[in-house]
Every structure is written in structure tokens, then in C-alpha cells.
Length: 527
Image (cartoon, rainbow, N blue to C red; front, side):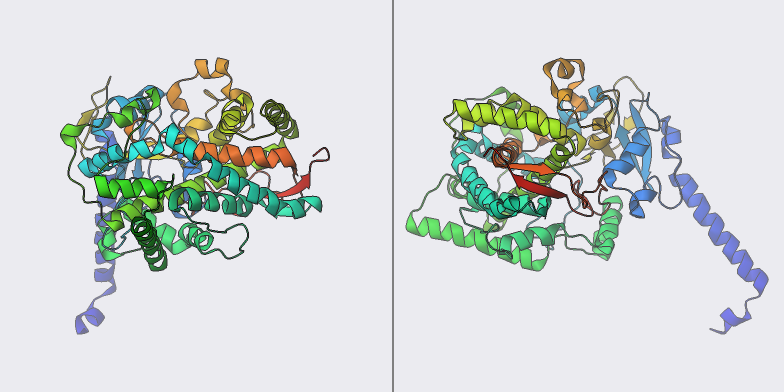
């Protein structure tokens, strides 16, 4: 202790200089990675690398990556740093196709660190890696065929009717509503019926338990957001700073609910056309009965790669994990897309009216009923939803990790195992090269003519390849059913609380806003 007090100012200064020089050389060495590789890179800032605005919560993930994406507009890929860890941003749609589809075996993992002991619901498709992911994906894919989704359609209609009834009174009075919460109630009920076979009553009960669970999972504090970013860059930090993404209360409630539903059905010989029944089939038989011929959009999934499959023990926790991610992904992405869509329709009344006219004319053909075929016959509805997903992609970036050494085609750049590769979806969707005037909401971006001129991999709201969102058709159908019901009965307009432009939440994992989506709702005068 005495030595500290006996140290002279010169010695303190010398130690400080040595420490500063050592730190400076450490960062300089770490930040020389891309220069040595011969890859154009964005100059990093000590100690943030290239994610300063994200660390300081100044920009949402998608917006920050767009800044990096725009730095070298002619480059097919760009080197960046996540703190001190190198990452590669892929800009070229053809190279994106290689990463997600053609050369998928080199990039098959997402690289999301998960502690399964700490997070019992973390063993779901989004997080699993290697053979275990491939096996489970292959066995779960038949649960999301168009035929099985069609069997759940009537449940979506039931929930949309409940949403319509819930909005009748505020619409009669021309009230101002926060639409994200309103449509989240609808999405929660849809997932309740289609995944769990349960009435969650999120619309009629202000404090529905599963609606509260949904809010808890996606409510992110500043500290949690910062720890998540630290763990992303340094997975070993999970041991030092263990952080549960899913609260204990949520873990216990979901596992208990799945267990009780399964036990009740098996004990009472109850069978329903829902996701839970398919999980029971998976548990008892090790697979889901696939009653449809292979369709082109399913080929990547249904190429089962049996030579790489591994034995999977379908425990209650593993099955609960799949039900949990179905719940989270299903209600949050669909409700976010639906609320963003209503926001844009309120700002663009001519688009809203044109879509309403298509809905009216379609319902006339189907005797006033919203049927499965009616939904799929509306081309302008498709364009409006696609344009919403373009401007507000639920997942702003695809993350892949190199799983086998890879050489980027047409270059001498070698990517080592463990390297992170990013596909900046939000940036691609806002690139004027692919979407003229990207900040303008224009459904004609998805006319046949424009789609033919655009690279397929410039638009990836659900990813692509074997890791494409397994429930994308379910989510799209759920969104379109809700939108059709709402526009057939109500009109939406901006109000004094409507935020223009919307401010994206920098703490959120998925694309979300900070202040909610506030609109005025009125009954149609001709309804």
C-alpha cells in the first residue's frame, strides 16, 4: 500500500503512457483485420468499432447498418467491426443468394449465443445450430404447409370478428387509438387458437395473461439492450454477465401451459387442427404426417438431408420452445406489420381507398364472406402488404456465421469459421437502385413489371433458403385477414398524435417504434 503513495508523478505518467500505448496498439492490431484481407472497410471508432450509434442507442439496427451499407455503393461487400470483432456486410444480391441459398452449407448457423440451461425456452428453430437444427427444421416444415394453414383459417376469421367488434364503439365515436396494441390483441388471440388451442381473450380482457407475457418479452431496458450487444460481440461474456432474455415467469408459464394442453388432449383423446396437435404428433411419432406433394416453395425445406440428421429427443421443454417461438414470432411480427400498414394507409388515403375498393368487389364475388380463396385472389392487397414489409421489414438484418472456410467467389478473400456475415435487409429495402424513392410508400414497387427488373435477393422480408422464416405463409395470411376485416368496416386517418416520420426504437430487436402508432378510426359511412 505504501508503494502507491511513494510513486512519483513521473512514474504515474510513465505508467499511464504505457497503458495508453498498449491499449492503442491493441485496437490498432484488431482494426487491421480487413486491411490485411484487402477488403474495403469503414474506419472504426475506438472502442465501438462501427456500431457507435447502436451502442449509444442513437439509431435502430437497420438504420445504423444502412449508413454503413451506403458508404461504398459500388462494393459487393464491406468490412466492419462490432466493437473489436470483424463482420462482413454483404451488399450484392447475387452474393446474398450464395450466402442464403447456393452456398448455404457454409453459412448455416445464425450465431445467436444461447445458454440452454439459463434459457429453457431457447432451444427453438431460430437459435438451434448444426445437425440438431437441420433435423428439427425438416420435421417441423410439414406443419406449415398451405394445406395445414388453410385448416386454421377459420380460427383467424373468429379472431378478426372479435377485433372488429372491439373496435366498433371507438370507431362510432371517431376516437384516437394506439393501433399497435389493438392489433397485437388480435394477433395474440390468433396464436392462442392456432398454436395452443386456447382462448387467450386478449381482446376482451385488458390484462390477458398471454398479452402481458408478449409485452414482457419485448420490453427491453437500456441495460438489457447494452448487454445483448456485448454478448453478441463476445459470446463468452454470457458467463460473466449472464442475462435472461426470457423472464423466469414467462419460461414457467409457457412450459406449464404446453404440458397441460398436451396432457389434457392425450388423456381425453382430443384432437384439433392446430399447431399444438402437430407437436403432439411429433412427440409421439417423431414426425408430422406430410399430406401434400412437394411444392416449389417448399423444396429447400423438404429436402430432408437425412444423411445429416441426428436423433432428437422431443422433450416437453423442446416442444414448448417451438410453441413459444411460434407465439412470439407470430404475434409480434404480424401485429407490427399490420400496424405499420395502417399507418401508411392513413398517410396515403388514395391507397387505402383503392385497397378498400378491391376488398369490396372481392367480397361481392364471394357472397360477402371473407374466405381463404377470397384473400388469395386480391392482388392489390398483396402489393400493399409487400410494400409495408419493404419499408418496415420486421427483421432488419439477417445474421449468418461461417461454419466452413469459404472463399468469396470472384475474389481472393477467405472467410474463417466463426466470422459473422450480415445481410442488411433494411438497407437493401431502402436502396433507390432497387426501389425508387424508397421513403415513399408505393405498392406499385411490387407490380409484375418492377419485380421482373429487380434482383430477387434485393427484397428479403423473411430471409431465404433453408433458414427462411418457416411460418411466413401463416404470418402473411394472418396479416391479410386482419387488414381485410378492418378496411371492410373502418376508415383510418392521421390525427394530432400521429408521428411523421415514425421514429424507430434503437433498443428493439425487431423493427418497432418508440411512441406507438396513433390513428383516428371511423366507421365507414357506407357500411
